[in-house]
Image (cartoon, rainbow, N blue to C red; front, top):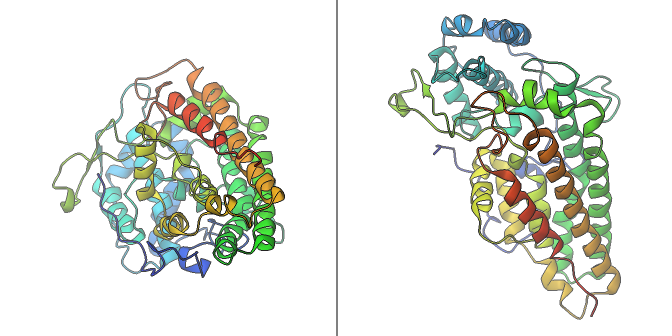
Length: 401
């Protein structure tokens, strides 16, 4: 479905060694999967036209005037952009591409992306190791700035760099995800150190790192619970969600991209399933899910994650097992209790997500053939499988003795 670059070389991938230097995986000890340095807010002057379109994108979509502007857009050369600039370019081009396709979503979705967007989008995506489509990394991880640079990355201090239509609901929806990512940061260090402690049969260390994971999960859940404060289900469904749909059920031609040979391409849309957080907790805690369509889909979502994050997840999955340790004589009731508390918090997170999926999507009145109440933005029938994965999570709690 997509052609992506290989993950960074990492000798620990596929072995039973715990993740070592987190920077090799683009993981920050405090920010987690968010960039170690705040995202840049502007590209070099050669890309001023992109920046201008980005500023006016909400107005262009509101008046349905985006198409003629992007049809005339020249394909700019991205060869000289550095890594942070590439992330900014990917953000802008992803918003342009989705805005172009879904500008008139209530009636129809366009079946092509003009070369001025498609060609550099493909080139940038290749450099970043992700498909040329709006993914979670561009929609959330790279799409923020702090209002006060002296204060933490948290709700009330983050604003989006780019919007589709804009407004409080869109801002809040994405800011919630950014704040959750920030809360998860310390847990990723703890996951690495937990596996080291398991390998060393260090019960004291295991207890300490599970406590850190528990605290992070509590913070993540607390942020998630705030979604309804400023994001209304009707506004989300009708003014936020339509533009983040992908092309899996609505293939599009990337004009001018010779590698695609004028053939329509299918890529999944932006979804929280492209975040590495919950899969990392599952891997660390040994939470496994039986085969179903959602599990297959979640594996495909890894192609949409930044390569370093994919590599981190693979390394954790291949590392020492906390559940194996819990079956050993070195385990203690307190360790099992903490483990269970972490599993129950992951279950609570999934339960709340399921509740939001019902109220923000399933219970809405469908408008337009491309904004289904039965399928997620990634293109899957979500309710059945979200319930199943929620239930499978809590089944991993351990009984005493």
